[in-house]
Image (cartoon, rainbow, N blue to C red; front, top):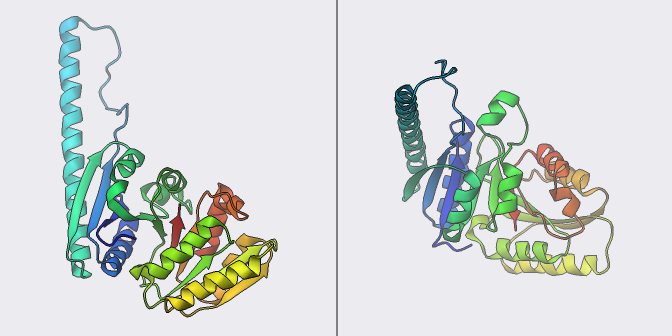
Length: 287
């Protein structure tokens, strides 16, 4: 990760935003990077009002109605922007209190995905909550934006859970493929993991040269000063990973996302949801 780039925290107006801000503040300090808090105000094509606008009306009435609706829309937009500004200011104060020196705020109206794509050239790490405002009403375990955001970005994305605690250990889901080898290199050189215990786990079906690849990855981590085990355990990756997360009391999972690899099926659709539910810890997703 380039420490000259910023950490971008994607927040919405839910109680989950506090946890996103806390993890983003932690990451920004570890990476010696600026922190930016991003809040998106979504526009909806139709906004219901209490007035009844049905029926045939004349040209003058139509113009008056359009002016009235435009005024109402502007009033709602202004109120939404002000609520967002107050919300972001509170999170900014929270991050500053956590020790971050440089905290910026950005509020946009439109699409989260488009905004993140526009910004990613200057971002070394995105931080996103597993759940958001929609999950508060539906009680779903994974927010509706997580998978689509990950698919649309190329930079690492830290998806976080509730109840922030500074991570002290990490588990790399390693399959020997190009993406997971790059993940090992990233962990080895990134200050985000400095001082942490880092474990390697290869699961799934045994593969040719699997042990050799695992040993080479373990050597890379040891040379970078990391302690931790390197294990090869046959079995369903989702089950094995979740079990080892509990066994080693892992604080953060590191894994590739949407790559052509033996564990690719883990990272598409419901299997991803199942793994994140089982792990219940922050996951750094790599592209």
